Amino acid sequence: MLITPAKVGATVTDVDLRELDEGATQELSDAWAVHGVLFFREQQLTPDDHIAFAERFAAIDVNKFFKASDTHPQIAIVLKEADQEGNIGGGWHTDHTYDQIPARGSILLAREVPPTGGDTRFVDVGAAYEALSPGFQRTLESLQAVHSNEHVFGKTAQYNREMGDRLGNPEGVGNATHPVVITHPQTGRKLLYVNPGFTRHFTGWTIEESASLLRYLYDHIGQDQFSTRFSWGVGSIAMWDNRSTWHWALNDYPGHRRLMHRITVSGEPLSAA
Ligand code: SIN
Figure 1: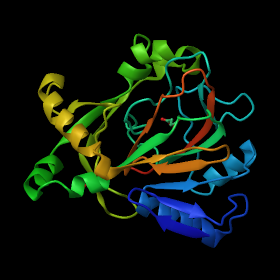
Figure 2: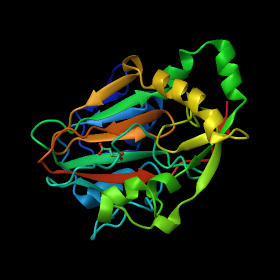
Figure 3: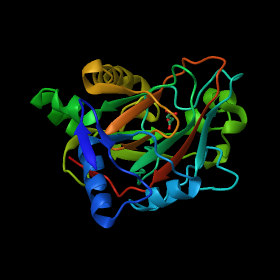
Figure 4: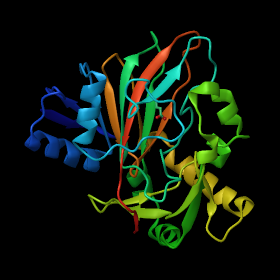
């Protein structure tokens, strides 16, 4: 197995994910924590293999809102049909930050890809934190923020309406409060833990008061210098760490179908920096 680091994440080659031993699993787990996102190509995983691979790292955390596979409820279906306009995950976000114990990460496997387009972007929120001045870092470390999913998955949310039957369970919405700067549970690296998808406001601040500082942080984090872009083929996999990355599924393939299988695995309680 060869792990080649890039500006963001690392590419893993010379590996068949159906045939990992304990040592290789530990090596991947360590690389996942250090690099934030790992990319693989041409893997031949059945849905059962995909589940077995995910369970090597942690228990599966089934997403409450995504449509699940009929045969494998642990697998969330991330689908855009050729005649649909909106896609799932079409903006910078981090999965499950609205949970009090957010998921460790997701393992996304491409089943059907458009002829061109449909890439996913990833950003390294640790590098974005490290690029800030020490004074600003200290200020951010004193803050907490409220994350919610009601404006995304709730009954009256526009996104929920646009996704139609690809989403469900609007009554399952909720929120959680997290430090704005967290410490990665495995590496100890400091990470900016706010995202445009789910962060609503700083604790003790109104939404309006929070908006301009959040906007500043989002513009800073989303810069090209902290991000990368992954082009999918059938059998490609990206496994990302939800604490140390954001992701964004680009919606630039009108008239074509894209089908991904996503398994999300559980994390541990977050601690402040
Ligand atoms: C997601 O946000 O989980 C979807 C990512 C993708 O489809 O590339």
